[in-house]
Image (cartoon, rainbow, N blue to C red; front, side, top):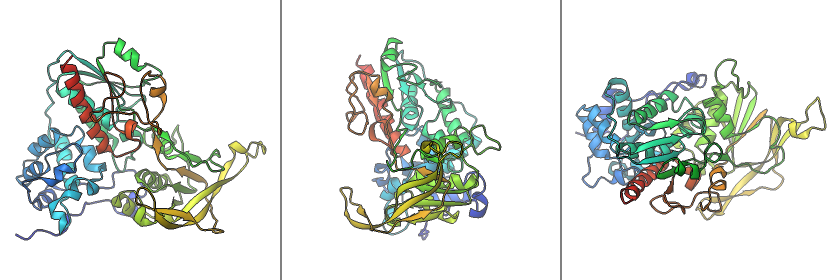
Length: 469
């Protein structure tokens, strides 16, 4: 039978409808589409796709179960490697990871591995009533700092091995970047809550509103009887450009903007945590977070939303799917442009109060691409006398984040690099005995699945460490 040359399309809401709601854009495969897509898999013996997965899911094996219609067994196979399959199936950049290694992709489109993972996880969540068995305790206690993807993965793997795990989360809801950073229309919060509940059923204790470095220190965790600590506190410190006008009212970091919308529910009617109402919005940056912020602003009622990015479309770091969705929804891309100043007028009640003025526009300069930089991307160069102004009321800065310095500043002997990332060995061990770290707290902002991979590596190392002591 001839193989379909293209992966099956993901059913979605139409752009004109979804741009006005916060419901999930992608609707998911039906059973028929999932089986048809699974039948495209060549079931390679050497499994090259697995090498592209940071958590080493046995991809051909779970796909073969889909072919047979055994969706629950497919879920069980995924769960051996991943604690968050419904999340990964939605937000992981499979096109640059597992799917990039797919043998079928050499001549045709690769198998839709991520879409199949999502289908399996959703089918399990909708149909399975089985509650995971809590493993018997081995008597060892481990503390996990942060309930993002690295922390949840580390906690899940350790709980399955019998450890008594407590996760300490600074915010009032568990999930880390999964709940505060990724919009509802890409990752429904009910999906994250379901994954967290599964970990709780394994015995993981999650304590919210605990800021490690303030409420408790790393040293105090050891004094409380924890024998090892994993730091997965993420990279929640936003970067800014250092240009005039960044202190004006109406200027947000993407972190603040998305947290207000996602975790504080600012998209509800008459929210207690408002962000904006109507107007024009400029989002500075070209990554997935920038796409999320722009598409969120559109759904909050912005009459016009711009993406301002200093390179061309070819260098845009966001996933192709997210860029396509943004374009379809009417986001206006201002490429090869870079902001040089945010314009505004002072508070009418206090004309001298420049810091509390209001945004009226953003001045940009046009760019051209020069020679490649150290990362291989062509360096953007300003074109003299090419400034122009975009008339906007809100500016959202989305140019990356750094690890929060709170933990390192309150923990003696914890070494960090020049970017504030915690320095670790290959197995996640920090410069302090018994303290491990992984995810964005180490690397800076990266992908969900890479953070999960770091959590798995550290969990294995913690198990070996405590087994020897």
